[in-house]
Length: 59
Image 1 (cartoon, rainbow, N blue to C red):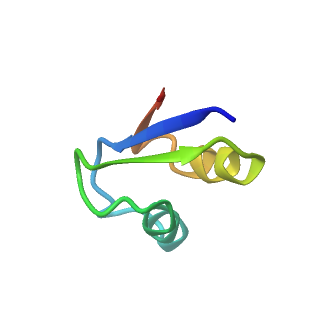
Image 2 (image 1 turned 120 degrees about the horizontal axis):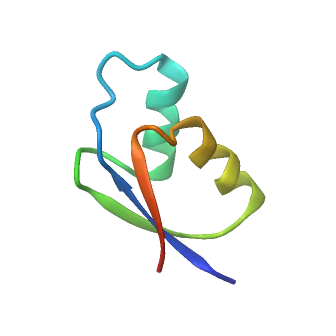
């Protein structure tokens, strides 16, 4: 399976609560922090919710 590197680029301040919870569920705790996850349909949906806050790259 492919892996994706997800990096938080923008703050979660002023975001709706669902977006803040999605960032936390992804394991992102602050700006410029990165996590690596295996690609899955559930992960794609989570990324879609916070696409304006993160950068996604293939790992």
